[in-house]
Length: 459
Ligand SMILES: *Cc1c(COP(=O)(O)O)cnc(C)c1O
Image (cartoon, rainbow, N blue to C red; front, side, top):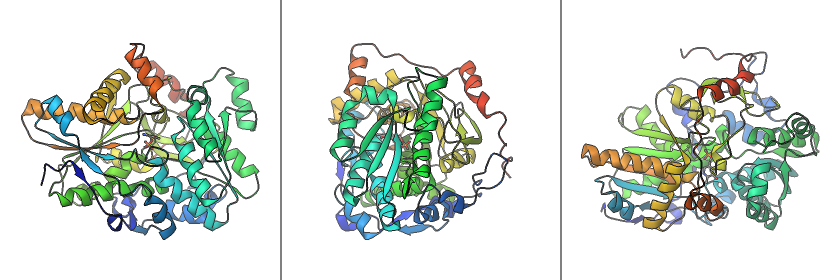
């Protein structure tokens, strides 16, 4: 059965509950704290999130049922196919089997729609009247715009300026689905005006846009804030990916040896990997490898430090225990906009700290080369973010060839690149630069975190 190219599940086989890795942590995760080092109570989060999502944020229940109205929306594109990249294997002449989960078929074209429909639903039933959010490359803003349209919620999206200018089509997708999209930093918020005064020429950053979206939510009536990655409940919603993949591999009698996801805030990696990581934690699959693939320009897991850091520039969020490059990190203008966030999800950071996952940093030219090899063999044009997972999978497949071992590699195709063709253009014209985040950059970007409370050593 292992020569099956497309492993499909029926609608009935879509998971009915999300998997919460917090139920199975070998050691507990550190809680968020405030600047004085006090634990932030969940109730404090209800200023920006509805109570039902805050409940999920702190839950240690292993299985959390997916409400029927959310499942109904997910059925529009789920279960997604598990596909074997047979032609890519042939091109690489590798004994490795390469599989990928194709998350590019959602309305927004990425995995972000999985949590967008859930977050819009929970806000709707809670009684939220309006939502705000930020978006980097625009995938999250477009995913949430579509979900808000379905659930009947008005939405304002603060879009990182450089993407707002480089990616007009994402903005138009948001507008098509009824979302309001503004360039960040904007003059609509104090946070935006402060940044513009300090750095008038800033290309913007996710950290800045988050500050603006939170300020808007807390200063407007019946308005809540949403985040497309990083938080526990967002990672939870993405576990449908890995749960489906597990069921699909079970169908063909295979278990993957290596699981790879690109890592921006950590949600698609967590989504594909966490349901499998449970087997590594309980000792039944001790050799399972999980790899986070990040850009050399934003190497928070490979070069950042595990620390308490703010999720945004204006320090409006609690301090989160995570690998970070510092909340004032100003990203290089790489094309994988979704991988430019300064921090890594606390749950993924925790797994990294416990040695349960590995990380690799890849330069963008290698990633675009991999993307083109993938497009030429498998037909799909991947998002520049996803190309980091592909490049890492190719490295692993070539290593398997060197070692002469048959190995099953699974990666997450987090989205398609049809709206990122300007990145492909730059690559094809030989104009792409690789950025290496060096020691001097690191020292500079971490400076803003030096006075913050330190996490206790791993007990
Ligand atoms: C947002 C995004 C990412 C990065 O976010 P994660 O939370 O790390 O998954 C990766 N790929 C695509 C296509 C995205 O839209």
